[in-house]
Length: 74
Image (cartoon, rainbow, N blue to C red; front, side):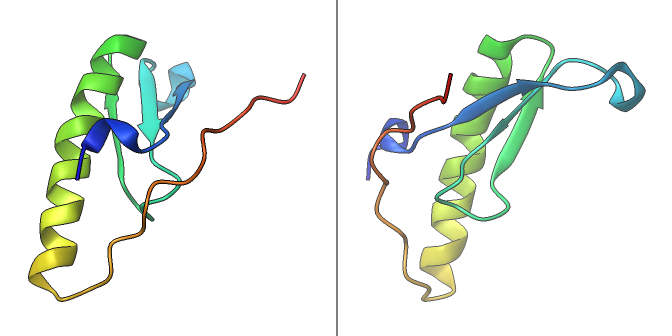
């Protein structure tokens, strides 16, 4: 399954939490990563997706299909 097909949300982290950015994958509960830049967070979350999918497979759990692309409300 192509990791890039899962929608990812990248958001800034408050300075109280160390700053940088967090990337979350809504389709995969608990799947997230962070980075100093949005690009780094996005690259790091690809590793998190791979680990999440591998763990689900190893535990015999169903892997959700990627949802439709997310749209931002204005």
